[in-house]
Length: 304
Image (cartoon, rainbow, N blue to C red; front, side, top):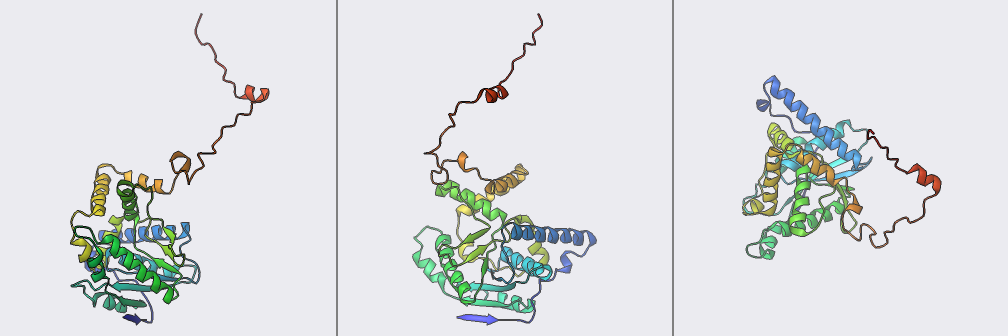
């Protein structure tokens, strides 16, 4: 079932004044908000994520990341030099205990156009996942299929996902350690079927900033009981490793993330990415003039 709701005017969530009551807290929050707006704006500009006339389908899970993404995009929409629509979409996967009223209430109060999709992917995930395996792969595949198909139904030109900088780095190491691949999550991606453009506006944002922003905004967070109830998730282990590095080695995560966007194909070993087979040296003899210009004169500085 699809529930469609359109309110007259969308607006960002207000700040919880009790959390930023003193002047110092208010100042720190203002800096945090400006930083997130700046990083999201920079990512949008660097990867041409949003264009004039776009209809952005924001995938809202009820977690801190998607709430923050939606709120920052609404804030930027007000001051942006271009016009674009924002519509929030939540997929109710019929997990036991999921509070169905939370998101519709929040979105309606904020005046945010939204859809609630109801699809029992939970039962399918439980059925298809082998005993002892984690649900994430099957769950995410079913969720993506449902959301991407719906994006086409409503004429969305872009699908916004809430992955942040730490998610991108964690994916890099998951693929490196467990997949034998050197890949992460691109900030902008064409879906496999070629029908959807996926964007990640939080690509430059630090998870620590998102956690603090969500706290100050007092978003009604909905935990994922399906994934969170499982132990030994590889992604959780990777995230713990990254947090430990961040504490012990300041600047390491910034360097890792910079490396994701600073690739030297000739210094790796992917034969499809770089033509190693036909690599040839320039054996043309140097002209006398060139030879003279490249000559290294050795001067004897020893005293006689």
